[in-house]
Structure formats: structure tokens, C-alpha cells
Image 1 (tube, rainbow over the protein chains, first blue to last red):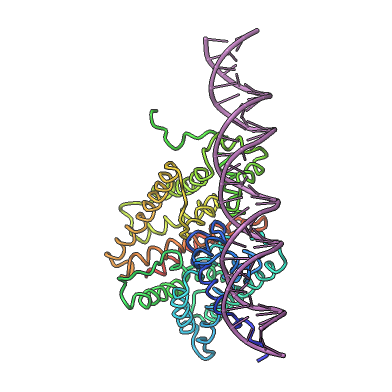
Image 2 (image 1 turned 60 degrees about the vertical axis):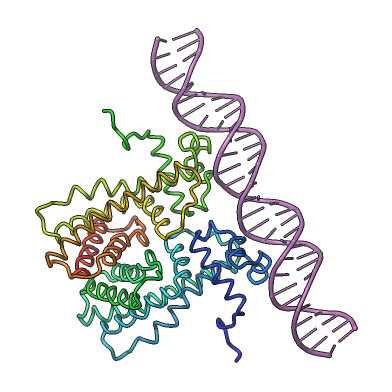
Length: 206
Length: 206
DNA sequence: TTGACAGCATACTCAGTAGTATGTTTGCCT
DNA sequence: AGGCAAACATACTACTGAGTATGCTGTCAA
């Protein structure tokens, strides 16, 4: 048990991350203050700064967790003997519900997708954001490989693969921008939504 | 000539908006300070506060201009006697180059698309952001109408129209997230990019 | 029992920033 | 010429918010 790595997280720390994700989502990561997060927790700054050395690290941990969520669910559904279409279909059908399940985290990480350069001063923050970028690249490559294989095999139309990849990734993350869970929404809404987006995504590649 | 409305903008004001868009894009609208914008202009705060009453209004004007850019270009290409496919194709082929031409503005307005609620305190700011939302809705409805017509006529596959619309809009704005103009890029890159995205968008609807 | 440490709360400091108040220059009209 | 705004620059104020230093309390091991 020498290497528990990421799973080593106290319940209190996880609770803080949940609160931070929620508040960062609502107010924006830069606008929201540490006191706002503390208020959401019903506690004070002291608790947060006991577990995290800075606001930047807290933000980075939220983003890192967002990346981890999908990275733990999606790779297992990839089958080497399946067709590119089937693989991609399963990947998207796994991706979307997982993203919507952990929505606040992804609303936060998307704020960094717009390209605002982090002003991470400390070395730890820079290392964390590098890890995030690495994980994102790893995740993107899962889709890139499936696209590549599909284009070579003729399942997908041949076209600029980088453009196709970026468009595909944004398409399957589209609900993060507009989805808001509602009490009166049908039981099957997320499943239906995932199915429709999967169809659109696959169709866009043919 | 009683009603010049929006076109009434001094060159200095436009120059400030350009600088603000550039800086807000790079640093993020909340992180960037008015002094940052002034430094970009090679002047001081005084100039900015002479033309804009607050930072919130400045931000709103940038966003409003972003919306105006596409709203002036796209509607004219819609033809009543054309098929939904042709109309949509022309709309996207107009939309993308115009967005990339005025990229900083759209990178700023996209920061508000993530759903962070503006904390506009003044009445003027609230009114401006309401106008922005109105213009955005107007623009969306251009696409919604084409989608609706196309689905009824059988050109497009019948499906949940709101989901399809949101996905389509995000797809045609995807380059805003990743595109960065490069000196060594081919002359035809933007045109090629627009063509590929148009094909993907139309395919996703069939 | 105690003491020592984790897990927080309280009460500060201090840098940065939005906004203001007031000077200073430049063009323009008469 | 001269005065009078517009278009800025300069020099403040007031406040927010990140980070820190220190105090308090329960728990657990020896």
C-alpha cells in the first residue's frame, strides 16, 4: 500500500473541494474569494488554509479532480477489438453523464479553457497546472487515436484531424455550458441527451 | 440623421475598446485591472474613466460590440427562397471568419458564457447586459428558425431542437477556444477551417 | 494526567484596485 | 486674442481580499 497517490484525501479536504467547485462555478474562480468558499462551508478561512497553501493551489486541485473524474471512467470502455464507431460511441456515452454528475468541477475547469493565462507565482501551482494540462492531453489523445484509426479505416471522413478533434471535444462538453439540473426533468433526460449528442458527434464525422 | 445609434463612436472610444478586449482576453475580465488596459493604451486611467463610467460598463461595451459584429454580417446572407441547408451553410461560412477577425472581443464574451453571474451594481450595467442577452437571443433565433424549417421540411433529422441548437452554436464558435493566428499559416487557412466546420455542422444535423 | 499535535477559529497585515477630485493641455469657436 | 470645453494626466481615498500569526479545543498515545 505504498502508493495510494490521489485517493489519499481526507473527507474534510474533499468537502472543501466540493464547496470550492460550487462557489467558483457560481461566481467565477477569480471573482470568488476564499471567504466565499468558507461561508459556503459554514466555517472560516482558517480551515481552508490549513489544508491548502494558497487559492491557486485550491483552484488547481479542483481542476485536477475534474480531469480525474473522466479519466477514471472513459478509458475502461475502450475495446481494442471494437470498431472506431463503437468505441467512440461508448466513450461519449460514458463521458457525458460523468461530466453532468460532477458538473461544478467541469464548469470551473472550462473557465480555464478560454485561454486566460494563470499567474501562478509559486512553483507548486505551476507544477499542478502542468499536470492538469498533461492529463487533458492524455484524455484528448484517447479521442485522437480513435479518430485516426477511424479515418484510416474509412469509417470516418478524411479531414484535418486537429480541427475535427477540437470540435468533437467541444461538442461533447457542450452541455457543461448550458445544462442546469431541474427537479421536474424526466428520469431519462441525461441518457436521452447523451444519446442525441452521440448521434450528432458521430454524424459530424461521416 | 436623427438616429445614428451605435455607429456613433469616437475613434478614441473604439481604440479603448480594442485595448480592453485584448487585455481582458489575455488576463481575464475580472483579473485584469483598468490600469492594465491603460498601460496597453500607453496612457492612464483618466482617459478610460473619461469615456466609460465604470469597469463593468467597459466590459459590457466590449461584449456588446462582439455581439454586434456577427449581427451585422450574418442576417444579410439569409435568403428566403433558399433551402435550409444552403442558408445554414452561408450563415456559418459568414460567421466563422467574422468571429476570427474580431477574435479578442469574442474571447471576452465567451468568458461570460460559462454562466458566471455578473455582479452589476449600477442600473446602466444591468441594462447593458440585458441588451447583450437580448442580442444573443436574437442571433440564436436566426439559427433556430433555420433548424426548425429544415426539420419540418425533412432536410434535417428530427430531434430535440434546443439541444441541437446549443450544440450547433458551440460548434461554430469552437475556434474561439483554440484558434491562435500564426504568421506562418496558409492564406486559405481560415477559409478551409470554415469550410470544414460547416461540413461537420451540417453533417451533424442529418 | 499530560502533553503534543491535528484541526480549525480569530484577528490582524498589507498590497492591489476601483473610483474620485483636481490639475493641465489642446483644439475650436467667436 | 481669449475663453471654454473636451480630452486627458496626476494624485489621492477607501476598500477588498489574500495571506499570516496566533489562539483555542478536542483527541490520542505514553
